[in-house]
Length: 631
Image (tube, rainbow, N blue to C red):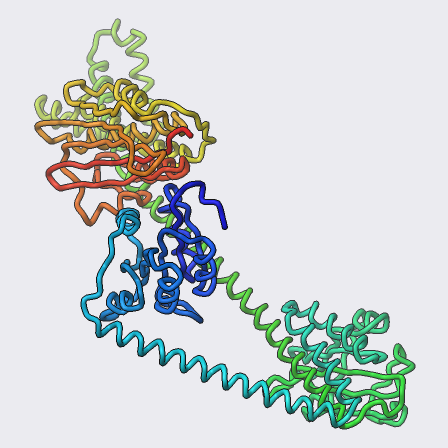
């Protein structure tokens, strides 16, 4: 029995790995979670573990969840068994309860609710079946399924009996034929599990020669032209030399291989020297008998197998039956190897396509976001340039009418040089001068002001800073962590102080019995700076601002919860799940990157905790962070 470390034991029986993984992630911090991928394994594990709670999927192969629940209630009558299924058909809950389940949970699993439900079932909560007709119906289905399985087993037994009788009859007919069949079976068993084509063919020719005692064996496959059979595997040194030479034969009656492929029938040469259609190979001088067997997949020939012996008349018509069966198995194995190769290539192409698609989507989102942030920059720069030209021309115009001593002043020379540089930049100075001269003093002050220039510079600076802030949001969570034990309450107080939050709007609610947490203080400070900053921005237009920070023990053992609550405008329900998406922001044009909360979630996840959000429109928003305490 596995050691649970004193924790209550929960067993999850589900044939979907992702479901088992999610259950383990949600519950393993508090309970000892075990998993089984099918009903039989789950029953055996339950008998050994004696779990305190069992989750079982209703739809699994071989033994479904209803049958598993019935068996578990027989083995462990006091252990709650909870159905966990995506089945949304009518009365599925009643059928589950009728099979012996004590409760019912639907998929997909709700992470926020699942832990509470598990704790409730462990605490004795139980659903009752109100209509006993479902129990009677279920018993009928169990009997019907049992009858079906008995019938299937009986049919399988009868089929096995029939096949065994046929094999016995074949063995009795001839000792030689029995030996060939046995050898062919061993060859087929050895090759059918090999899915690499080259390894399959090379292994095949070696096994055939060793099992049957043949002089030589080779495998030919039709090439892409459809007019030539090319040697792909050959036995021994002769086979290696033939492969090096690129040995091939035409698909015609001029060779036994070609004739066997064309006719889709085996060919035998009992006296190699007298067979006119046989290719006489100088690398195989001892061959006296040869058999060519077509490799057939359905009605199509994909190649041929040649087996050769040093004895004359070594093959008979009975041998064709045994060896052709082996050749058919080889053909199927070749097809499977080719299909697997094609499937792997198709899968690799699909994976590449999906990867490129995901990269393109993420890149597009990033480009769109950066584009939005960078959009105001060209316009602001153009206005600054226009204002600068006007200011310089205005100064130069004053200089023209100024006394000689002012014109010779170093500042005067500076303005003249500026006018010359503007002319060199192809600026139409006369047109700009004419526009300025046409304006009254009041109009000129409205069209040209230092405040306008600083406003445009602020736009440029803000856009650039927003773009540069992405670096910290993207790289920050990936920095090397330095986990240590420290007081979460002290970190929150120090963070608020460093941010300069007014004391009259901040409230602290720190429990005294909170132990030190185990985390990286630098990264955790980034998380709470982000959360507090978001809270303050949410209360920007709220008349009464109130920020509340709390730290307390969680219901889960060895866990504490820190919460950041604001009295802001709140987040609409349809946006709550989206706040964790990269580049998604609820701040509109107020400068958010959409990377802060995803970065927070990544940091907290890497520290072994979790972060959740709850919000009510017009009331406020609360972000809760769960973190492990020091062991």
